Length: 373
Image: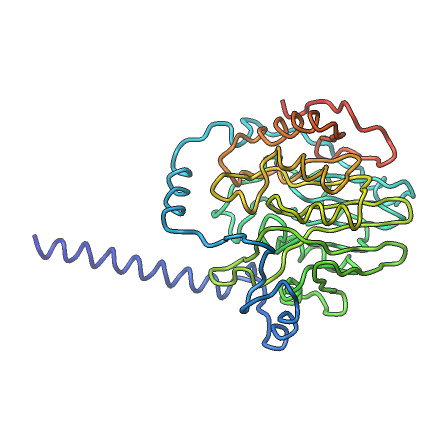
């Protein structure tokens, strides 16, 4: 009997060792994990007010350290059944006519791809925001939930030339390796938060096409201005690279429009700061989804999303970060239903277009059909 148990424990031990070796090899070999900053780059980052003791940091007393008890709570929550966290059938999307996109009309318009990905046509320029076109927001398809729709409104190959890509942070649901590989040769410039450029360079994007910005810094691109603004979140793609790159929200300004993109963020005073400095905004894309009381400091609840839109002085707002992936335990329609209710209370105009539908900035955007029901 002792020999039997000794054999069993030996097999289990060997299996654990093999799993550890496989994970280490995968993390070190797979290109999905991106690049690593050099010592010279770290010296540059250290000049930022948002960098401390070798890591990027949030403002205020934001605690990102997860205790063992919190981790256990999270595991128990994930193990419990949670109904309706994903649609029971494929959600409807609108297919985008590639010819209409290629015309690059002067009228400002947007297309939503679900979650936080947008194609923005503004001032005769094509802008991609957090272009995540992959099926799974994870370093390997087996490690994440599938997209709610089987296809995208438009394939990457059918997209026109892209003037600018802006990225909010390096998490897999916002920075997708496969998407960047397919996109990189048709993109003129990438504007990203500090540190994030190491991933793009690792994936073959030339350094002269990457501009890294700190919070409150800005860059001009022809007749457009892109302003990197604060967010309350974190970053990381691997096992030990947490907060090695900065996270941000963005302001996009043309001669006629002023647009805000929240990226991922918990609710904080930075929204009022942004509103006071750069508002009012004609349109605000506000994070609303993938929330939980266990990580409330890094993702907003829907009621906070509506209030944040008021804080940034948005004339109209659109809830994003939902409608594509299951990354939390709430029902998949909970974000949109709760934020609509709160937006009405706060008297702020809200827009919830179908994925792939045209969003014209100059049109009246109220009374959208409730396509998610």
